[in-house]
Picture (spheres, rainbow, N blue to C red):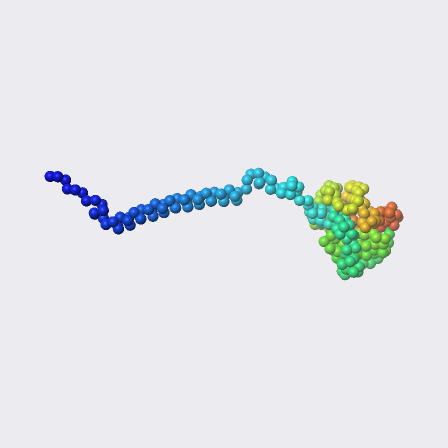
Length: 275
């Protein structure tokens, strides 16, 4: 018996149905392609983002010296960076503020030149020790005491310390720290590197004997408003949690006079730290 002829797909399935099936297949293929592209692109984006946010080894290794290989200089203030002095004692000794204009003059401008309140108890000191001048004892609110010769007075206090003014442009600044350095000479030498006073000239940085305390004197000259000034800054470590800086300044032309020498000796002999 001859084979019966087979019906074509078009005869079995309506043409409209075939079109729908073909369209579904095409959409499925397109969806698959889009999914693969999106998935692969997302992975690449993640990898790129990770690379962009992860510092290289060279960047990490150089990050400690972002300022061109120089470490930030420690602040010259009555802190752990300094044995026993104030911001100005590090050079009335470290920074020249206001183009060399004296900070005491600034204090007078701000306060109208008047002595500030709360200057502490004062009275004639009957026991001035080996001080060569008669003094009035000044008990400062910050805790220390010192003998003030005639013509001297407390003029201000602030972050730098307590300021006193005397005759002929003489000045005294007393700063303090609760975290003194153990080597006063080394600390003065370190602070000298940041000295910017006009025409600064170091005369000496040396260890001195002073009541058995770790002490060093930094002596230097500089120009202030056209006048040659002369300073000695005594940094002394009283104990592990208390240090002082006594910076005495006078005109260089007067430095070798008896009155200036006696004044400095009087300050060092009568100074008493806070108990």
